[in-house]
Image (cartoon, rainbow, N blue to C red; front, side, top):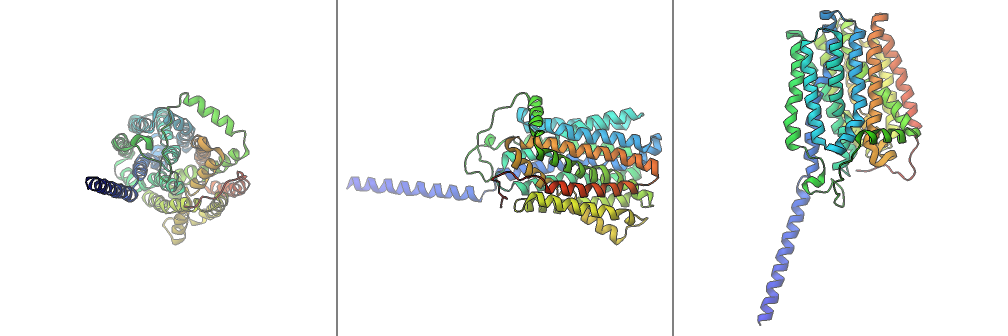
Length: 444
């Protein structure tokens, strides 16, 4: 009788333990994965740090009027900024593997704040090159899309395209959403308070990074989102600079790298280098108030969120090469029409252009990153950093050449037409990127 009672007690205990385990499994299934909180912090970080990216296009006319610097000289400072933004990115991805995401990003934000804030005391063009070109360029390069790629690769196995689209939208939209505020500050209070505002925005993000961001799922005892098994945190990778250069040399021996770099250079030329830097002064040339032109760029930032997230969703389901070809072709056609749309006031065709360009602004990033993952595996974040470097080199060239063309020809028309033709070339380049054998289109 005693044995029967003991057996019954053991069975009851086992059933209770089983129910508790099942309840724990259900709670784990219903609980939001930590990866989404990390993605949210990354989104806010990129959004806040991107405030300073709004400013260069607004500074061209005020700096030209106050210091009598040529637009070409100011455009050169922006070019240095854009080039360093891209060239720093692959090294930053390797530094994150060596020192961790939190440390690299926090230091980068502090450098951005110092560079932007120091511009209020500048009196010579070389100081603009130093503060805005060198310091802000280096800081922003560490906060580039390679940061988003690193977070996505570490924390997500599923939904990578969607998360990439969301984080990319933060980068581009943050640059544009601040435009109305900064343009109002410049028009009402001069450009210096706007520069201070940008510095404070970067500083405000630092506590979020330090307190909430984590380097790897293993730091909190979790699997990456969608992974069937636990992934150990890799040890710090020494020799960050050497590894970055070695990855470049290895990737440079493959054809897809040059095609991806070439298409992304044209992407940068037709977005950051062209529209973001020169749209406001070009619209002002046609009599449009600066605040109105800046508001149009802000609308691009709003629709960019929709377009980039949608592109990430498409990238999880469709062939990324074809997506790239469609994006570049449509962008090129829209640029050919832009000279006919510029006017003293905002007309309906211009609104249509702005909405379309917003949807297409950085829709190219999710399929480009997907192709990097497909081709280069574990090194994809660093390879994407080098591809992003080409994006910024293209942006830097057009930022300078656009100002030079305006000084030479008295208008931006030739820049719009040339950029439209380059986008057509990018569409063709995307179609000839070879597909790696055995790869499949990922479905969500």
